[in-house]
Amino acid sequence: MKTEPAPPAPMNQKFEHLIARAEQLIARIESILPQPLDAPDWSTGMAWRYRKRSSGHGTLEPVRHVAALQLSALKEIDAQKQKIERNTEQFVAGRPANNVLLTGARGTGKSSLIKACLNAYAPRGLRLIEVDKADLMDLPDIVEVVAERPEKFIIFCDDLSFDDGEPGYKALKSMLDGSVAAATPNVLIYATSNRRHLLPEYMAENLAHTHGADGEVHPGEAVEEKISLSERFGLWVSFYPFSQDEYLSIVAQWLSALGLSAPAIAAARQEALQWALERGSRSGRVAHQFARDHAGRHGG
Image 1: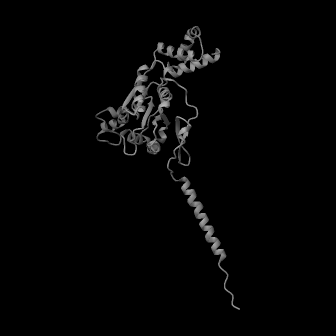
Image 2 (image 1 turned 180 degrees about the vertical axis):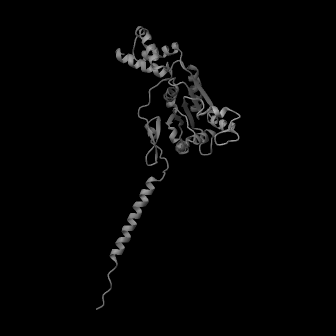
Image 3 (image 1 turned 90 degrees about the vertical axis):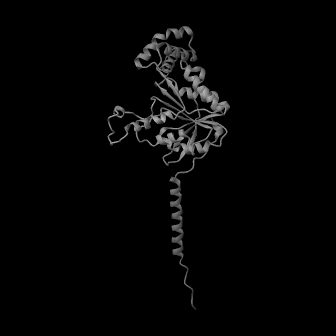
């Protein structure tokens, strides 16, 4: 009796194993490919940070503890405060408003003013997303996620400056220009910087008779390109070093907020001046640091 040959089971098993390996490989490739930015649970807070993971995927992480700064607590920057409040009020109310660049001396309240505005206007729908300059290339993705939301979003870039050739420069410039990908009425950029022009400038660039090292025929145009990013912010707000009296006024405000009496605050004057002298600065940040140290040592 003639028997039929057995089916090639080993070959089928090899084929199935090959298919399984291919599926695993495809899954690994997909895991490292850029993915669309997922919207977070917007009910979890009023501020988020954009973070880029090692895999290259970006996420919006809620800020669990937002600094409880109030506008009334910020002293000696009334003119700057008025400008930022007015612009933010227009934005929240749905009226035209500008992107803002806050520049000037360190520790004078630039970032604090933005955080205080968030606390003041959050009940009316203001939200904030902090983005590091290294992640500015992802601005279009962030805007896409929030574009249809009813809230108003400030994209906050702290301590912003660029070195020559950094890719985030052009991404931010495109956003400020209102490119097709970035144009949306519920997003503004608020950025802080210690320098007015966000790209470094060099003395040689200002010598009209000197061409660049690469032989550029019109070096003046290169200089204009470097200052053009700052000019794309509709509102510039400048901050200046504090005088001695202004510094002491800020110290007194913080000491009072920390529970010290008026006589105790007056007695701390000389120590506060010595503290500033040792640090070479009479900034609001130095005043706050002194107040915390002094109140901590004296039971405030």
